[in-house]
Length: 181
Image 1 (cartoon, rainbow, N blue to C red):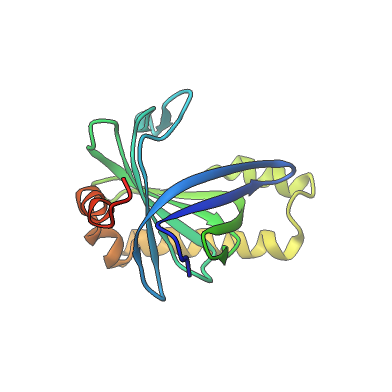
Image 2: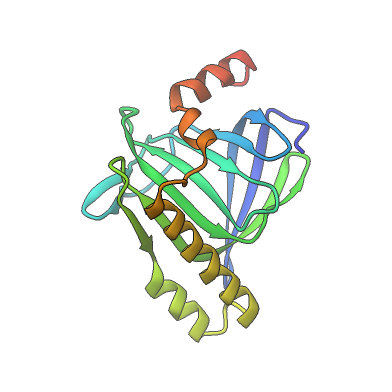
């Protein structure tokens, strides 16, 4: 677990890209760590299905499940309006106090506010596999994870209740209560 009110997440994308995200820890439990990313620094808006999912200045409430092959973001626009749930298929995060490491496995699942689920970035995944950026076993595991998330989202039990319960307002209130904003 973390021992800090902030975490630095080293997010690797094969072959050689790494981003470091600084987020505020707003809830820690054995099964989930909830973090808040305020005022996302984007050059251009992230568009999904023709709609703005994130824009410069947006906020995301992130849900990391230790040992899981995905994390989940509750996405919001700059005005705090909810845009949807976004799951990154990733390697299980290596959590070492306030520094985490994970690798993006290209596939993502998007669920709109009305519950429509869609698999994203399949072309990037196929290209990564074709170029040997993911080994065979990891590629199979990533595909299984994405398919499972998509099936769960289409059949109703996904995302988990905690993701729906922890709103942006609640995450912000928790950050203030922890005196970390």
